Image 1 (cartoon, rainbow, N blue to C red):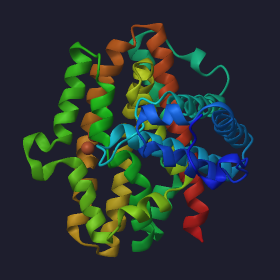
Image 2 (image 1 turned 135 degrees about the vertical axis):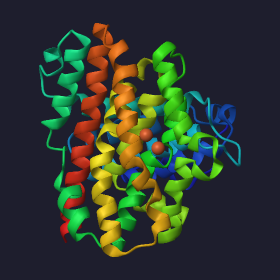
Image 3 (image 1 turned 120 degrees about the vertical axis):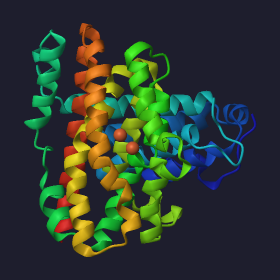
Image 4 (image 1 turned 180 degrees about the vertical axis):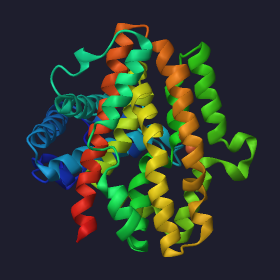
Length: 347
Ligand SMILES: [Fe+2]
Ligand SMILES: [Fe+2]
């Protein structure tokens, strides 16, 4: 049996990050080679390591949670960024690791949903949509003090720099999320996603592409890519991972509808606070174009999304339940993320 020579290969990795690094190390190896080399006890050890990571994360081990989300984020990079080298895309081993990480991540989000809540959803589409919005308005994430107090009134330039790094996992690739989630749609939903995507493309003007405008803020703060991954917290990684997970699988289409729709719906109120902070600090105007634009554009996106994507889908009981599930994943995970940012912020 051919094996890869690495000093750590026989040791049981107690350090979650050692496991992440070992598995990540294989992501730049050709898939067939990965599957030929990771076999037998070696394979069992790594798969057991991932299961252990998931189990520890489930009971609240923060180091395990971070490692779990970092590994999933690196795997998703492989699926969402054009590679410069060989990759393990298509490897059976990597697929198994991915599925284990995804199942564990989904389980945690489902556990956060209040028992019986999904069953309360009205059946009539318009009543259902009002109910979804009410869920959001009544949620503690709505007008969270992180935005309404900290960002608005207290944050300094360094805090804003950190803030944009954490936000990059969703805002920095919103166009690709839309591109992934629209596969297989038709009719009004596809037209709405297409219109939204075209807005992301600056309606054809290369200088107005939203991800490009978002990246301008990096120029103001001089954020190198290496610093970016290092700085992301477990909950920020989770936000990005949930967005990719729901957008890339067809089975999660309705969850993506809820997750991305709620993301857009919450943006305008949040960005009003960010723009206020930016102006309070007198930072260069070029960096805030993205946020200013989205105060208007995302209220239109959310309205169009609710009308043309959610309402037609809400005729189906399966879709209603899954859209609400994705909505709650977004509300709950965003609340935990913002809670976590508060104490750091207040320090
Ligand atoms: Fe956008
Ligand atoms: Fe948008």
